[in-house]
Image (tube, rainbow, N blue to C red; front, top):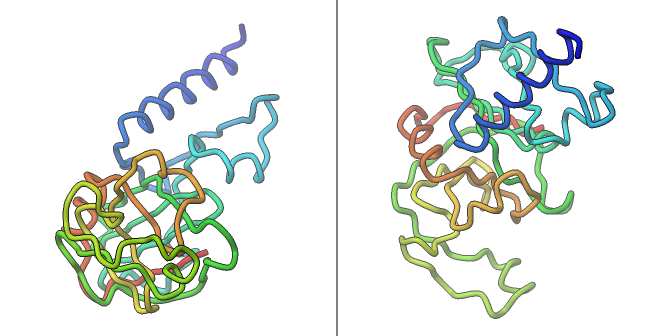
Length: 201
């Protein structure tokens, strides 16, 4: 077995172990040079962006003019959320759930406008029209679809939040929001301020 093949296997094993523990990848974009290959040993952009284990660090400069108040990038294709602190000391990369369809997906620039610990969930009018059996309200607790924390965005009904079902992470499973493991959203919540920039691609 070649040294290159062994190196690839180690990189895949490390990525899988990190994902399984659902810990953020504390990478600096400038220093990350790893390549994850698809099953056939072919590295392609399409395979990389669909594979939850193929997270790659990226440069904030490719999406933001500055890091004033910090910055969050939600990537619907790779199902990942990136966070950079204003002082560039912290870079987090988390797996997330993404909108189920293009109809529910909104892209562009916004910001965090409200931070909610132990949020209450109220289905949107459209959600209730699609599924009248939904409860009118879900108070904080383990069955709350918003999990333990919620960051409201400047677009009505769009949020970055925790999750009630960890199986949704890495999947197209939301009505427009981005869901994180609860322990990850709790870390993010403490770092984000009202006014943190958000870009959805």
